[in-house]
Amino acid sequence: MNTVLISGGSINDDFALDFLRKRSPDCIIGIDRGLHFCYRNGIKPDYVLGDFDSIDEDVMQYYKNQKDISVCRFPPEKDATDTQIGVEKAIALKSTSICLLGGTGGRLDHFWANVQALAFALRQGVCACMIDRQNFITLLKEDTILKREEQFGTYVSFFSLGDHVEGLTLTGFKYPLNNYFLTNSDSIAVSNEIVEHVANIKFRQGILIMMMSKDVRLSTKRKI
Image (cartoon, rainbow, N blue to C red):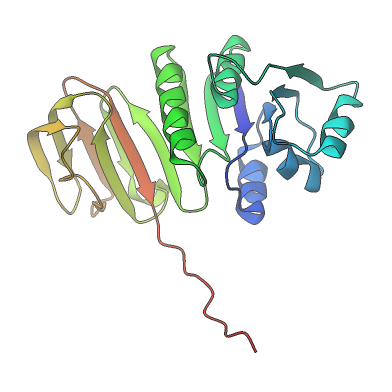
C-alpha cells in the first residue's frame, strides 16, 4: 500500500498537489498542522492524528465532523512526535511505501526527528522518503541504482546516518568514489551529479542518507 503522510512543516501547495496527483496514494494520513494544507485544498485524509496543539479549531472541528475519517488525538506530553506516530500508523496499516509531505522547513529539531522516523520505517523493512519542492530525502541500507531521467533535481548528496558507511562506491557520477569509508563528519559526498544514464551506489555496511536536490529561483520582481 502506498501511503502519504501530510505533516505540519512548510508545504508548497502547487508542488504538493501535483505530487499527490501523480502518486495517487492508497492512503493519506493528515498529521496535526498538516491538516491546514488538506483543509484549504479540499483533501479528506483517511486518518487524522496528532496532539492538535497547533491547528485552528474550525479546521479541527471540520475533520471531527467527517464520519468517514478516523480521528485519533494524542496528549501533547508523549514519547514520540506526531510524525513518528504517523509513520507507525502507516506501518501498522501494512504500507509498503511511505512518503512524507510537510516534513521540512521550520524547526531543525523537527526535521531531524523526521529523518529518524524514516530510519524507523527502514528498520521495519518499509521504504520511506521525505519530499518538498527542492528536496527528496530517503535512507539506503543496500546497493541502489539511479536512472538519470528519473532522478529528482540536479544534485545528489550522501551522508552517513550512523558513525560511518563502509566501502562506499559511486559510479556514473561526476565525482566517483571507490571503497570509501564515509564518516558522519565527512562532506566529500555533497552536491554530486549523475553524468551517465545509470548511476550505481554500493556499500558494505551502514545506513546512507541520500538527498536529491535542486535550486529554486526566487522571484526578482520589484515592488512599486
